[in-house]
Image (cartoon, rainbow, N blue to C red):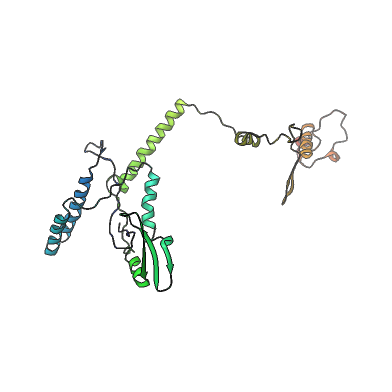
Length: 278
């Protein structure tokens, strides 16, 4: 990835995530607990310079440049080895901010007067803030040079991170999660869960019983629910009346006392819902 420098200077560099180990020929994982910093510097140098020689094998200027770089940097190219990343989301966030962000954050621009741009950056060597006043055209040029060419790939995946291997890895991870879930079910049998009531949730969350009257400290009964838009949506007497009607057969589905048959004795139970429609 070609990423901008903090001072808006052209500073091509690469961010790389590597595994702490690899698979051998028998597809067994070999863990690498320590990666030499000196090895990273020299191997990175050799990799880049070998690519230059491969791309321009007949160019004498490239050959001289490669020799000069080996002499100028005997310890290898600069490598900033970061600490181990454990959280996958943190690693994705770390890479994503470089892929989606501009060359300079908006908050670093102090002022702009149509002729000059005043901005600042933090110098990592001194740890101090450095202020820069740049002409508008130069500032624009410094930004434009960081725009990648069209269709360029900003991210490359290799080895275990390749798309083909990634599908196999996901299958292994899903299988492992399935086995762990099954083992947990065997150790801790799942209990039947019922939906908690409003009262139980309030007691669990706040330790207060919403059905206790704050004045008399006795348990209250739900009488009515009133909605500003829909009006009365629940009334205690209506619910009780409907329950009595269903229990004693006084009315059901619109059939009331006026439809009660004439030939009925006192104490007989009338169930109008049992009658067949004509």
